[in-house]
Image (cartoon, rainbow, N blue to C red; front, side, top):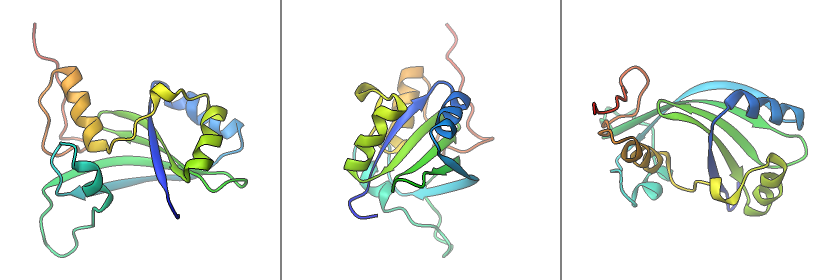
Length: 152
């Protein structure tokens, strides 16, 4: 998609969001497990590097791994893709498309300007850990990531 941008929003109620999208005519294309590899470190340079991520099929070991389950949704009347991402640290709605198309959809979904996240998931994860006062794991994968609150 030419000039594609993406925004994310943290979901408090994934099921309610799924229902709202279906009521608005969005169709689920299924749920897929995805594993992303990156060489980025959890800093401001991560967004560009994550966008240039590549699958590691040549035996070159990745520096970091992020796993998610993505439910992809489409709508017959627009060129925007919506993903509902379940990550080890929460559920997120991701909207991908042209800036113009996204601005048309955001009010329909009842999303506020303040709720928008434009950072890569690595940055979101880093901020999440800082807010929860927990140490970041090197990889963000299901089954390995255990978030515990420090004892008081």
